[in-house]
Amino acid sequence: MSESKDESAAPNFVRDIIADDLRSGKHPQIVTRFPPEPNGYLHIGHAKAICVDFGLAKEFGGRCTLRFDDTNPVKEETEFVESIKEDIAWLGFEWSDIRFTSDYFDQLYAWAEDLIRAGKAYVDSQSAEQMKEGRGDFGTPGTNSPYRDRSVEENLDLFRRMKAGEFAEGAHVLRAKIDMASPNMNMRDPALYRILHAHHHRTGDAWHIYPTYDYAHGQSDAIEHVTHSLCTLEFEAHRPLYEWFIDNLDVPSKPRQIEFARLNFTYMVMSKRKLRQLVEEDHVLGWDDPRMPTLSGMRRRGFSPAAIVNLCERVGVSKRNSQVDVSLLEHAVRDDLNQHSPRHMGVMRPLEVVLENFPDDHTEWFEAPQFPGREDGGGTRRIPLTKVVYVEHDDFMEEPVKKWRRLAPGVEVRLRYAALVTCKEVVKNDVGDVVRLVCTWDPEAKGGNPADGRKVKGTIHWVSAEHGVPATVRNYDRLFSVENPGAGETNFLDQLNPDSLEVLEGARVEPDLAQAEPGTRIQFERLGYYCVDPDSSPDALVINRTITLRDSWAKKS
Image 1 (cartoon, rainbow, N blue to C red):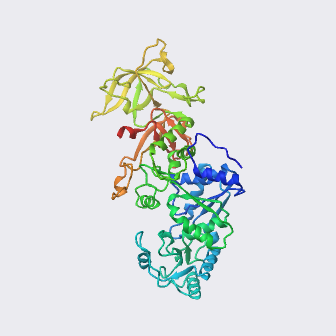
Image 2 (cartoon, helix red, strand yellow):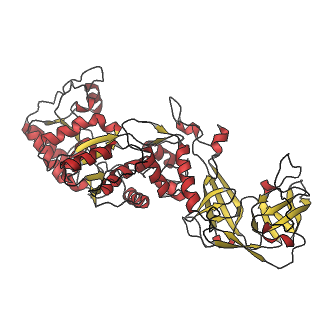
Image 3 (cartoon, rainbow, N blue to C red):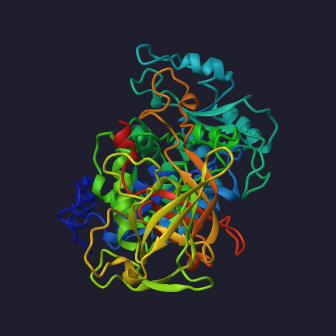
């Protein structure tokens, strides 16, 4: 048993409970589970649950099962199963076993018959509207169904015929017989089984009835000998029902449900329904669109798993729901990428610069550090300087403002790592746009360091026109323009950020990125952190902006 704990980490009351249970001998080993429904892709909120379920099991030498809650065949797909497995592995966690709730369909059905025989469940033939009305509300007790006192024999007959597929969807529902006057709405004769004539991704057409989450969840935990069933706070009111099923069935173990606060961020929506709507209505380019809060989208955008896991640990585990400012996530991403992303230069909006006194057909090679912040530079890369280079259009101003420290007529600047250049001539097209700069370079100041010690106003990045690699750059930003999209009566779709994606077709990047593999993370100096997109090919480099070097939204605020 391990109780090692980073004292600088945020409080985690679940960790404390587990440590106490193991210390007291209540459990010889901790067993947890992560039970997603395979009806969509995991998002950043799930990352916290993954870190809690898998992380605590690993920390205390226990085991964690990955269990897919596949009780609703209408929305579940194998695609989502595979994506969930990929996301968990990407975050760095391993499951002890993979299970599906559908593995237990026979046992769950048998237990449902046991409840019927014990007089604790009945088949209700009311319509959905009638059942909803009969449940009452928080101020009004419910009323018993007229079918609540059916005989055991009639209930068993109807339930078996439901299983056989004799009835239409909605004709009957199996309900637990608990207390229609309970102040807890979840205890007012909740549904256990409903009729669904839908093809299941694993069991095919074998079943015509499917258990509800509330019924299947606790019993699946018990079958797997889960010791600590960890879930988010919205299930706190469901705990009495969870325990009722465990107490009223002959299950092999008695797990304990513990609830903790969800991980919510500003500028994001976490509802699977809303995320599905974004995808299906083409507001984004799929579940892995880099603007989405899905783990697959963040992976594609270039977020590192370490940044996400570290943030989850920093946020901690508490009993109070709160909203985390997305800038904390962005800070964690920048902090990690700053340490692990090699530096390169890329020009997003190229402006041609001709060095008129540079030898034709000649290349000067310079060494540049991969990680300038490290003492040893973290290794070097070679960058070529030729007669024609590209600089950023934004780094030139024909009539410079006060304190301008970049290119302008008559101004000398440093091409990073390589040379000092002075702008001599500005070339424009027929409509007056600047299309070329004619400059001179100082061959006595190779590397950008003048021997005479003269001061140079600024340093800019650049790429050789001859050696630079063409790239399509996708500049991603926050998907929503407000902190709480959809708050109140507002339609969250009306708050989409119109500037969340900018596509630049004509960028140029350093030549050693030509063969960069998808997923490669880099920092373009002076610009931000970027990642090679899976759409890339050897002949067409596609690069995503992960995040800017600094928080540009702080200025907007």
